[in-house]
Image 1 (cartoon, rainbow, N blue to C red):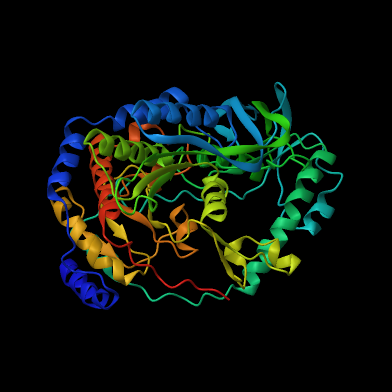
Image 2: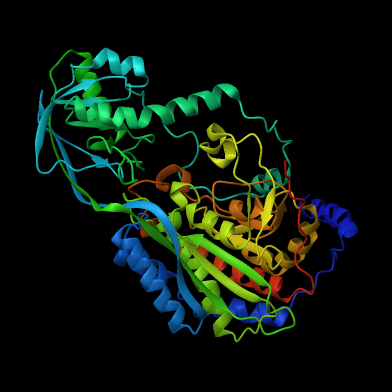
Length: 529
């Protein structure tokens, strides 16, 4: 079934000039395989990023150290044009070193919780009485005004424990890959007015709520982790922007401990807690973050054209950012090392980018694309301009940059540390038969499918949005969406070394094949309005 679909796609793509018999340099492929499988450095790279440098929150000292260290490795490996490119005014840095929560009454019990990024610390141990309060509207703020001083506010209802219905660790079976080949018809792209109204209301309430908590003397807020089984899934709160209210200390607590407190409150028992959160902002003004860039220069007739690969280097702060996305960074760095080690002399220039600010909304890759490749006109309507791009009703005119016609493709890796099983073609029918040929030498290590499905929420979207082919690989999920994603379990132990080696080899081959093609990869039509 998989190859029938690929052949059907090849027939469609033929009208666009793509050959079903795409040339593949099997000698180079073999050299890439041997370097990747026999002399890999990908695990050593991941180890340094995660266990030595640690979590790399955007604008944190660890993220700056990651920029410095990756530059040094690229230089050591002989890459060219190694540099950082600033992404201006991302906000203030933040870091935390410790957090503890203890229940003092009705019985003594340690509780597991971690602070949200960009929220203040407690400046030493503080105590307060827990209270459950919904603060979801201006009416809620008015209702509770004058009633919360000295309280530790629990913001979510008790959640009944629900065991996982699927295995905690998953690899795609043949039937799962077949299912991925089926293309679900897209739903209407119109933005739901009700959803848009809710989003606007949340954006308007957030700074008001932060200031309300300060003015009312709230000690801290505590939210329930969105995952069970003792896992703390925590991201950001407060505000990273200088001059904006950051609220009070805010923590996310493992669900089972959170429920323990909530049951005591439901029994009308006074619950007294002690908190100690060592967290701080770094500086009083907005600072730039940095994308780290390096190249293998092209040496052929199309050396001024570029093939790009990348992964976001920033992470959240609870774990060490191993699967999200130290694994992607290590694989992309290893792909560049492999190509350099095997003596690749690409026709086009091969450029790697390690992005900042992805977790805050693809900020690093979007900044790069808008500077060098293209961007849509800003809306004239102030309300629409304030909306994130995915909520805007009209894209406007595409303003093409100097590199819009030079970038053949961008390849991304950001779905954990699982091995590559294929690639998402992003509805680019003409590219399908090309990728199908490129995958043939990798069928013996599990990479087989080209699916027309779109996948989002990571940096290839920044390129795809402006008409430059941008692709994310299909990866085995492992425990990425059951234990690891944005949690305190995102550590090196959950990465699989052989999967990283396989992914590094496939990425290196795809990038090299793209660099050697006589023509750029086929492009989709850009939607403008």
